[in-house]
Length: 195
Image 1 (cartoon, rainbow, N blue to C red):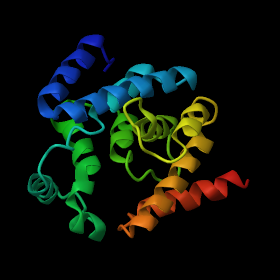
Image 2 (cartoon, one colour):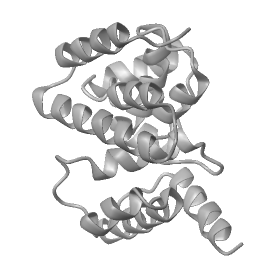
Image 3 (cartoon, rainbow, N blue to C red):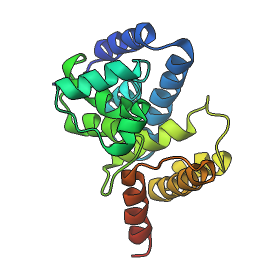
């Protein structure tokens, strides 16, 4: 199915109704940034915009609703997610993208699914959404943000590594639970960078 501008507009309007105003502004920023990165790195621009619009589609659901969706549809919940159900928005969001918004493109679904933790062997679109979520224009407080914003338009892998490094060290200083997939992703790309 070829994605039409009308589909994008319909999903944008649905997000405006579904998300709170701050989250909606963030979502528009991610969709815009993802589109720009897609143009720069020769990726499908419409898919980047779509994944950007839907990446947080489950973010404003309350935690009990996220858990309910996971149980009902056999979506695996790890120990960290069970303790911090707000982390389930990526898994639930990828499910909603298919069920409620009719997204069938596997790459778009995976970009939504992996936008918080990343994963080893990400596609270009997955990297773009992961990075766009971090660098979009409304983001104010993140380490090395100006540098990573520039780097993202030059080298996706190096930008990805910087974000993973900064995220892990930030979570460690907070003594927060760290999803094991974030560590796996970091280790994978650290090894890739030495090849």
